[in-house]
Length: 168
Image (cartoon, rainbow, N blue to C red):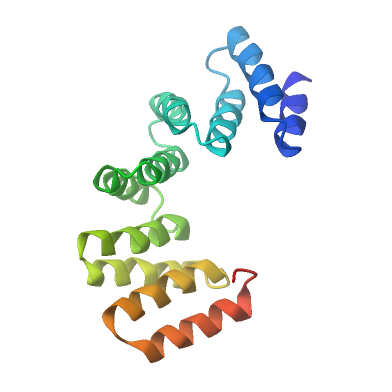
């Protein structure tokens, strides 16, 4: 019941209480995947990226073929400014989950930081194909079109994002 209560605390934005429950659960079983994921997500919402990264790295060691953990590690690394390391983890995650539009979208978002617009477009286009009704994939691709100077294509993708999404 403690895990369910932790989820309720988390969902109601009572992060300190959620963390307390996750800590107790992990004292009982340090490899409790649900508690580790819950604690990691809670750390992310508190912007405690170092702690979240520690939890996801532990999860990744426990399940090395779990692309979701690598995806989350990549996202955290990017949030902390470690784009090159984030991209390396995202590429590893993509090898495990080649049809995950979230990973393609992240790479589409990050490649422009390395002045690699063609690689960015490749991943953004793939994200749009796989996640065809996800507004943010079209937003990412539109931004790459804009960076490349193709303003009409950018406007077309923004129109599609507006059609599908609730993002401004």
